Length: 87
Image 1 (tube, rainbow, N blue to C red):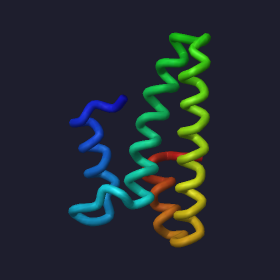
Image 2: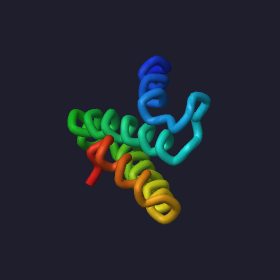
Image 3: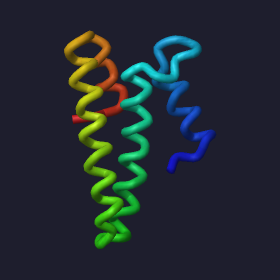
Image 4: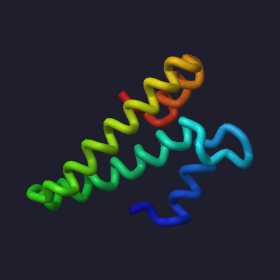
């Protein structure tokens, strides 16, 4: 779970316009933050298979959003990947 203030900060950094909360950029940024936190959790708790399954689902969801963004707007995709240091 991401804290509300941290999530608001992630949204503010990734949003395309002032009221943006649902663009692919914002969704990928939120998923990336959640993935990083869950990966840290799994380093401590290696046998937590339920959380590992959730992590795999989040990674797949992020990949889907990235594929969509790459298909719709290559410059936005490249800017996001560079900003979030993905790949």
